[in-house]
Length: 604
Image 1: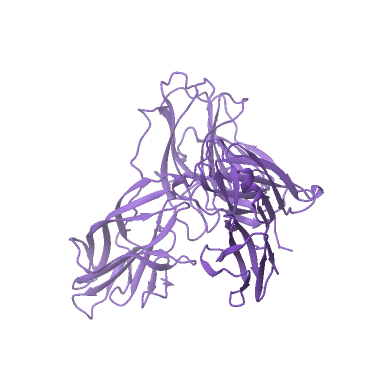
Image 2: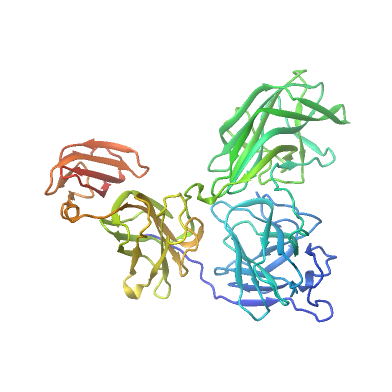
């Protein structure tokens, strides 16, 4: 039996904050701006609602600096001023959500009512908080969705939303969905006409500024020193210049610079791009201290370097090593204790084994860069789960797949079933639940237009919920659109605790996801259906040999591992699998009547 876990706590709702008739009249003067500073006249007019919390005095949005706590986090300052809004929730909460609700606003006089705000929501390992934005036409009406932000945003970013309706009692709500990621942050919220909203260029080039020439880390002539930085999800960053502040005595002759990706431990790993024995295009002397000179070194990259945030955001490292003009003199990377990136500087003697520097300092550097947002349809991404609750079997068409791995995501894309355009096919899913009182909601996504994104209109099916009382099994119907693109379409099955998945790639509370393939055809001819082979693969699991029995002649059998790599091929109905490592495989069988069948093979 697979192990699983679930936080159990009672759901409660707390309303905090009150509207004072004297101090919190309806906002009618625009643009209206909320800074969340201590001297803000409107901050006390924002109300809160907490669901799923357990500590009324602790839970809720607080007014702090950055995401306000923890180690290895990136947003440590407000967007402007000293304070911003950031939510916190006590341990033991169940599916907590925290709403921050604006004062009532009369926007009927605005021609193009618009809300602008700055936010961040940095991932913490596999964990990612979300932000939902709503509006309502009066304090007693229902909330209507405006936008959801589901991805890793590791630095302040501006969002601008056009309000679709006007009202004399309009309110806006920012809902933090707490999924154990770094805290969401909000700052500098502006409501007004679109031409009065403060528009800022996208934050892109990263910078850790000098703290009045505080200290240094190194020796750069003896050690590789690395400083971490982040690229937001769905963002491509193109770096054109690198600025590094150094401290030396007698000058630095040349630099080795590198951009490196991160390994599973968050430390420098593979080299993305390296620049060896380079000299700065410009050097500016900044200060003298104890015989050492603080300098700003500017490097113009020979060609712009593009790095990618991908589907969930990515971390990179800037790595520096130097050759001094006077070999016996040390040199250092100027450092500051005011952290502006997640991890402090790391060092390595050989560029392969990395350790933290002492003191928790950041190196002083700037990346001059431009950013473009990439469309989330650019690539499938891997869903993640805080707690495992397995899918045990998926049956659709010719696919009938029991699965046993205790991992959050399993890729069975090599298992393929033909489907016909315009037809409806049943799907049956068996999934585990936490106990007799809980349920798992089963959602199926199919990329019918094959654009690389699971979730377009007509691609989402909430097929039902599984309960122990019904045998942990649910059967639903998948309607294949008449305009579905011919060929292989990815199908993703998601089991999520209690609620249907609203996005195919996210951090879910509890469950599992599995991918399969549906081969869309114009029609399944009668002769084709009649000629379907009913192959029997035995023994399965197999230790030394596996046999294939069927009514048609076998022309070829291919065994592929779960990464899609072919590891064995044979035309024999008895196949020697003794040399294969223990694990799960897919066996793809081609027959002389033109049909192809795939089954899962387990090697003992």
